[in-house]
Length: 202
Image (cartoon, rainbow, N blue to C red; front, side, top):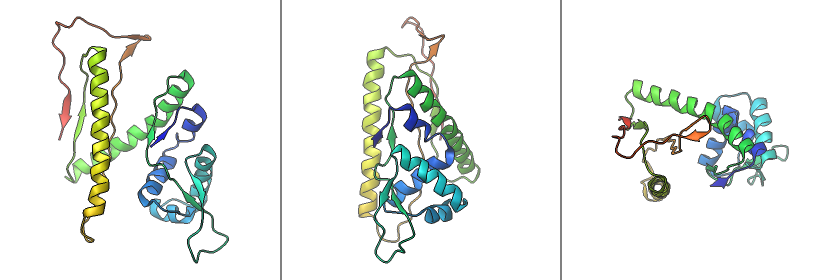
């Protein structure tokens, strides 16, 4: 996982096509050309080349050695770090992260609706708010990080142990836990009030 706390690097991810390019490169785990990515994403190669260069400049994509037998004129790229983590507190970096997440959330929502329409599953969506003391929220945030680590470990294990003809689907998830602010201040209320229950969609 790449920890990104720099506003300039984060803004390099603000275009939805760049996020799709990174996802494809992470999935392949091997050097690719812009032409390979263009074919997979059904996007013009010149557009992909431009966005790959932007990702390369920001450090998310590296130049790679071409595979044996490749032509010398082709440029090959690799995205070695799978996934991105943001834990910054610089206001400019936070704003840049928000610019990244807006198109990302819309892409995920569109995919969620399409999967629901064709009844492809499993589909799990949950959202809502809960009232917690900060100490409990920190504990649960740590537990959620452990759960995500388990998801990644089991995904890697499934790839290693699956039979050659086992079909794999790519599953998308987003997870956010953050204190809600109003006018720059945290919302608080007495503990005796009954907490709202998060909604879910399964």
